[in-house]
Length: 321
Image (tube, rainbow, N blue to C red):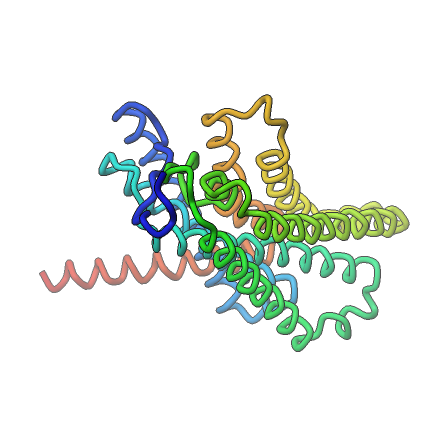
């Protein structure tokens, strides 16, 4: 049996068995990637350029958009490359890099969603203390902690996973390098350290989930105490995008990793992985833009400015010709 020192590449799970379906998945992933790049790029540009959006909520939204772009760019390009060239290989170092950045961005995403829940809790339940609890320095510290926790988690998981001897071949039952699939290739007696690290990560994730649930219980109680219906609607509408994003991300990732083994299959695992790793980063900017009038206005201004510049450039080129 091959060991980790003799493995120079891994074999990823193909997205489809036939060439026609591979090309269909290629175009589907290309559409999702372009939507994610456009949506998240517009949010990043709008928050960075419009001083009206220099608020804690939009600051964390900018960080979330950066994270979503990172998630998409980590997994999708290699899957598209393999579908285009009808191959399934990824180098050993490429697999390690992909695993590192996937864990890095996923941990940051979870951290930011928890911080954004805290932002909504303070804004609705403790509005008089909002400026104190979420000042510019506090926001910068929380964002830095999210990125630092992502780096530390990614480093620990990557070093632990790829230090294991691999005795079960090099075929991964996933379209990108994922920790559970690599653990299946390791010797059964040698992966206890990484399993322990995963259990610690799951406990921390569950702690974030409990914090989000507890915060929203307090938020809903505070919203129901608002006397005017218009006030209740306004307060609740600021929470809907975050609650939708959290529900989509947590429900798909929980089911992907905690589903009963009896209903597991390669096609189901592939579908669930796409749902939690590819779909949320492309939908998040549109979800957040639906009920945020200030953000929609800023995005509209940027798009109008870009269209005006393009038309000006085309008109100038036509005159010169």
